[in-house]
Image 1 (cartoon, rainbow, N blue to C red):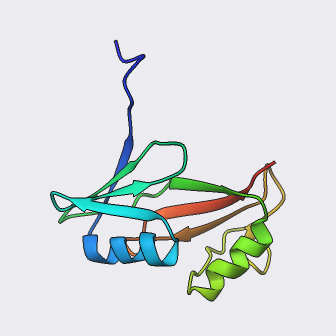
Image 2: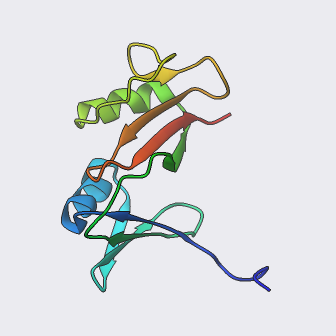
Length: 121
């Protein structure tokens, strides 16, 4: 039934203006706005919808993962832009977990949703 549809993901935020600024200026994504919602134009031709929700509750899981070629450089660049990385058990002083799977670092958007950068093979 849906094998040929171009499905897309979406998530909520409590403030579209703050989300637009964060995703476009801080993370450097191309962002468009229509009908009071955002589209994050991410490589791979699969946009992600960001919609306002008055009673928004931040996701307790990672909603977006950004594969990167050099996690250490990316973490430094994001930290320089004001990103604070989550301090979970097993992460090093820069916020990167290197013990299980690919190296990964988690951070939050202004709405409290969890995002990550992870070392691409």
